[in-house]
Image (tube, rainbow, N blue to C red; front, side, top):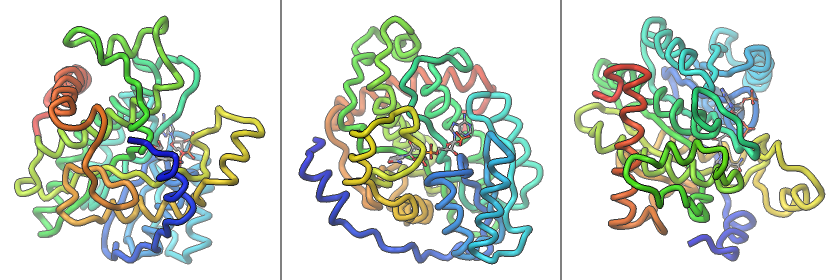
Length: 325
Ligand SMILES: NC(=O)c1ccc[n+]([C@@H]2O[C@H](COP(=O)([O-])OP(=O)(O)OC[C@H]3O[C@@H](n4cnc5c(N)ncnc54)[C@H](OP(=O)(O)O)[C@@H]3O)[C@@H](O)[C@H]2O)c1
């Protein structure tokens, strides 16, 4: 389980090597890359030779500022970086973005589906609590819609492509009381304003991500598609993710334990270029691990099946046929 000693050790004493994988000739999309880990991961991927890097951002102006910062620091050619609009709180935006990927990109080697939120207040987008829409429904809608492009690239260029989602070790502290409801009612319970436990919601979303990545890996075997699907945890890092938290204690906690954003981003890059052994797995600090707590063993298998049984009709309701990979 989540041990404070392990956390302190990881945050203060584990060193994260700079990524060395070559992205030469590759086209990569990083969502939520106008700031934070996504921006730094996009910077690394550009530095490592990617031919084309698309910053997928809800605020295009902020995306353009990020693109300029990457161009200036890497001296890449101006056309290497593109900024495309993507708002994960809108299914129409996710679908329009995916259509653009399908029609405008000759190849796609990696989708780092990094965008995410840690909301402390209950808010609704697309008929779900906002964290569930952004971190789960839209993230997997995007993943399923773009998977065929990644598979096409893998076959056409005889390579392996990557689809990487952001997990978190906070999955270990998720209480996820909403799972203790009758069959088919988990999402409905998560969406109830009356019972929503927003201090647990981010942790729940990361637990769901890790199990759903495992499920997606089963549904889309690597041998058939050539797409490596995995999940990453960059450790606790400076970024905007805790933007709704403030005060002396939060600031001190960051000062004492947080990794620099750039350091955490190295792991996003590592896992976005990880070997085929990582398919379907969660890799905190870049290493495949055995899941614990409610993700472990029979309980984990059952929870995964229940989550998929609820998410798949939701995705099909948004975009018919999307889950048939
Ligand atoms: N930082 C950590 O310690 C940590 C640890 C484990 C996992 N993670 C995960 O790493 C990922 C990146 O987060 P971060 O730490 O870099 O936080 P961040 O600085 O807040 O960056 C999050 C990014 O996601 C974007 N985003 C949020 N909602 C969006 C939406 N509806 N549509 C499009 N983009 C949206 C944000 O755009 P705006 O700027 O427009 O809001 C921003 O670019 C998240 O999935 C997070 O859960 C972070």
